[in-house]
Image (cartoon, rainbow, N blue to C red; front, side, top):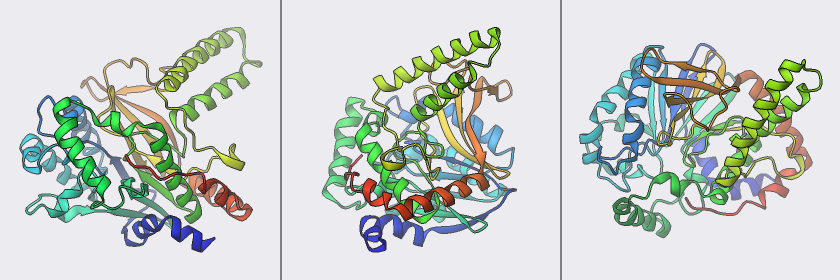
Length: 378
């Protein structure tokens, strides 16, 4: 099994072995953002939509609350814009990023869209640029990397596919106004990358935090999984509820079903709960989502021994997240709101990983599921 594991995931094994170690504990505060895709500030720059939102929450929430900052790849959109034009457009963000060093640390992980920064002379954030980070939480490990390394085609930046992707985005997608989320949201390709990272994380007994696919994940659960679980919980509560609460439950279920239908229409139906242990989800993979969403920005927070998936949005929420399921809190009088989509204690998450991954490992279920994962490129 060990030989098979190394043959299948040599890049992920390399990332774990070469990761920069960063100690954290129950007093640590860290926020992880990914996939900003910063351009030149023009109308073809996808980051422009949420730039004010992100700048506000970084400066007025995370910086003041003493969070450290990790940027998990594809921060600059070098496949469409030059680094010089990006810095001219968003230089103030670089200053803001560096201010987080005062809170503990700042690290910037590179992805496949900003890989060219390694060749840029004079790049301002070069001293803090890494490929992967390993948070050491006691005896446990949280591995942060962008996620493209799980793709057979994108793990080599000099491959034909990588070069073709560069020319496609620079000379076709940019002039035509094709957005990055339309490229990243190919369900089959995205799912295969997530499945590979999920399998690797379960085998090694770690938590992996990635970006790349633009799909937020918490404890290996997608939005579809979360909605299904929430509907199940409400159905279980219905028989013992009083008449007034039953009316509320019926309304909530109707709203959640509408959201679930919307996810299926958009093709967001793939789940990591596959194979022999479909009902035992191992909480080993998290995804911070992206900063170019149509309605807002998602992030992963680690604070005081908790890990959570949060969503920042502008004004009143219109679809996307059930207002009954989540509580929006406004940041001052900014007009920007924060929603905690899900949270759990890190100690519980690692206990679940240790207990459940051991049972799958001993049963041989990994070989059965891993053979079904096809190589992808996004």
